[in-house]
Image (tube, rainbow, N blue to C red; front, side, top):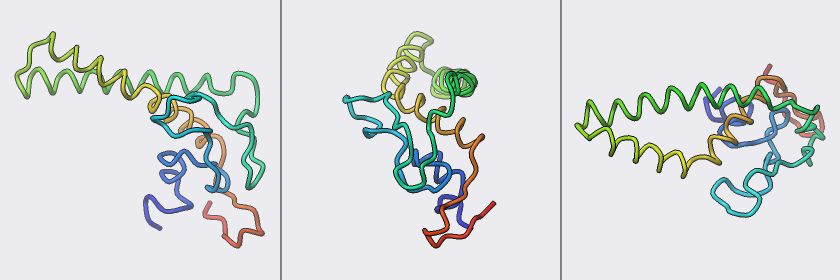
Length: 133
């Protein structure tokens, strides 16, 4: 099986697709759209998977985002400061700019990872796709 093909976790996570059927997008708008950037769909239109299974479900996504951004920030500033020789101020200003640009993407990525940890690929039988689990 290919790493980014339908049926793999990376396909669902990076494509922001339904974790069960890999058909429907989880969010209403594209990542870099200014209209409704944080709004998720309630259910998958294809298989009926609930994207909001319970109140507070996505609290775990905050931890994923926090851990990812912590390591990213350390690595980013270290690369710019020690490898490329930038000043600390320039490194941190560039980091802030990058974080502002990719804030919505990181938010969506953390939610996608969290729901994919909890929901496994199992397409509806009428789709003609066999389960990969």
